[in-house]
Image (cartoon, rainbow, N blue to C red; front, side, top):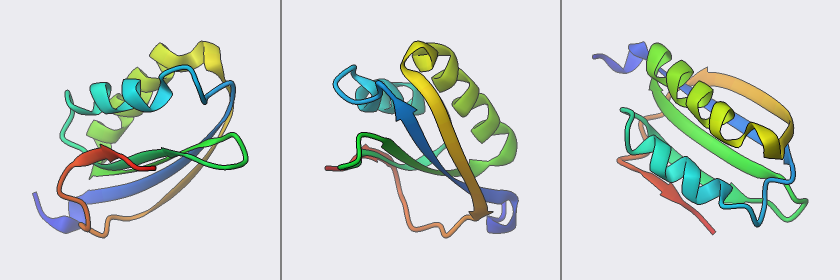
Length: 94
């Protein structure tokens, strides 16, 4: 797969998304998909997810995350751009 086939998605989740295992659940789910990037808590109470991968893989990953954490999410803001290739794994950042 060429870099042109990859996409970057940045999602800001709001709701009761901190203190409920959101980051650890995200990392666990990401391990089952061909994605790279990170998830972290923000000081305003939201969670930021930056993830890169093929379009279908990202769709499946985000759908699985939403299905598992839906009860905690009251809103999300999605930004899509070209993948940078800067990540070599998926991790939790502080």
